[in-house]
Image (tube, rainbow, N blue to C red):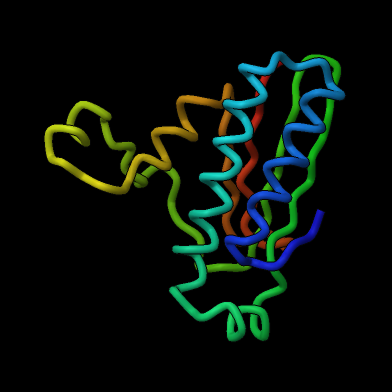
Length: 139
């Protein structure tokens, strides 16, 4: 699946993930978790990876998001490719929800959600196909 880097396309991405999970026989609960993790990951790319450019400018310079949705016998993998700035997964802070509430934060739980809702998380920065975030959820 290849879509422009726009928030308005997140709904299409979410529905595609839910449909794949249903075809794979994943429970609705696990499918909802994977749907939310993919949504957070794609929203982070759109917001952070391209440096806040307007949608029109971004589409001139970046080819959008590419997602590979792969079903295996025992798991589903979602690969999210982008050509943005990338990040270091090991240095990325995962905010504790209790601290989040105590500090009255309004944003910043995306990486917590992603880590919590997938079984495996891999990231490769700057491959020949761009940055790749791979989210794996067991059936």
